Image (cartoon, rainbow, N blue to C red; front, side, top):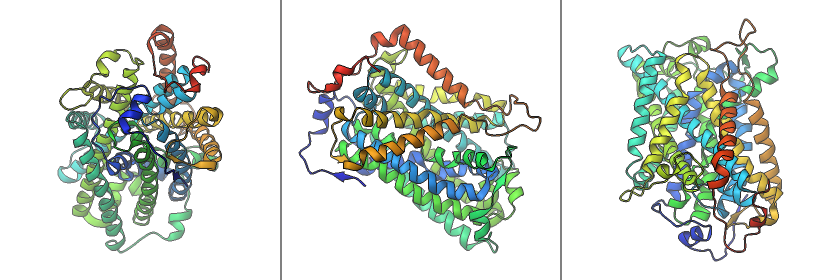
Amino acid sequence: MSRARKIPTESDDALLRDLGYEPVLTRRMGPFGNFAISFSVISVLSGCMTLYGFGLGTGGPAVMIWGWVGVGLMVMLVGAALAEVTSSFPVSGALYFMADQLGSRKWGWYTGWLNLLGLLGAIAGIDYGAALFTGAFLNLQWGFESSPASVMVIFLCILVLHATANLFGVRLVSILNSVSVWWHLAGVTLIVGLLWLVPTQHQSAEFVFTEFVNDTGWSNPFYVAAIGLLLAQYTFCGYDASAHLSEETTNAQVSAARGIVHAIGWSWLAGFVLLVSLTFAIQDYTGTQTTATGVPPAQIFLDALGLAGAKALLLVVIMAQLFCGNAEVATASRMVFAFSRDNALPGSRWWRQVHQRTGTPRAAVWLSVAVPAVLVLPSLYSSTAYAAVTSINVIGITPAYAIPIYLRIRNRHLFRPGPWNLGRWGIPIGCLAVAWVAFVTVLFLLPQSRPETGLVSVSTFNYAPIALIVVLVLAALWWRVAGRHVYDVPSRGSDRLAELQRGVV
């Protein structure tokens, strides 16, 4: 799909200076490490497992399996189009910097705020999911009763763990992500193998690939199937991590672009095998949905493998989720650092500081875990809040992916292809990518479940649209108060035609 043109390229730091930034982060991540961070953030052992219970009631097996195939295809198109732009602009700011260079200051401003919302929502979703699975393991091991309050305590502990791990430099982050790749692949292989070999009974192929289940309260099967796509779309988020870590990656113009595409491709394959195997292994559908562990995959493990096997596999999944959350904190902290470097956030002078010894933006790391802690607070009172948090991730970060792609299409005369590009396929693939993003963004702003009374309550309300509106309003207000005066993204060299476009949306 892509082609790497054999043309002379500038050194990484020289290109970064040409883009307007002085290198301050430590460039110690190789091509595999760059791929590993996106693969770790996508994390099929996090996304697929965490929202598997949601999928059981929103379309069931048929929507989970075929939705994964269809969404994966569309996400590959989005990823390829984004990789092409990343090859031209390998900077930590990533999406908002691309939007600024190909559009205007306002395009960059709002893209940055959407990207930031999505990344912080992703940390909330990933680490809260890890807390749920940890609670399920403790339930099996010691009879621990999970409650919203106890899960919240576990969640906060995980956030602190991830913040601490990200304070020691990108070298440690790169090592952990490399381990994460092999852990995920080995973990999927182990889970799939045991679920096929151990149980004496499996569901039929007809059940796995055609069974439709609707527990949402909505009567329209097409609407229910569309809502059920959240499982796949949520899992396939975060591959912009390769772009955000590009200032710490060698041969970034090629490595970051390939990292995005390869991470999506391997995750697409691994996730399909995992979902099919889990669904074949279901022993009691209703029992799986209403499990006392609070985590349906844990009940599948328990029914199919027994207590010892279930606990072992839960530990495999939890460890994968911890790797995933750690990679997401690294990504979000680089976004906070880059956005603050361009004076876009309140208190930018604190968040852009880089620790001299480790080369890490430590204040940005702490901010990146503090905001997710606030985002998850509604889960103390609402049973649907977690699904809303995952939607926040999707509706924040997915449009941010599409904006640079859209601007690359609209202002193609300003786009200078990097060594990794799609050639003549860039425009048609970009158009399909933008159309898909528009569809899923609207989709996940809609209600996900219909209350029995027909009236929306505190426990059934979808908070995702509110979060999106709040962020956009705050971005607009901060733009008028200070942003338009202090926000400053450098121009690319003296030949950048986009300079003539600045200030025009």
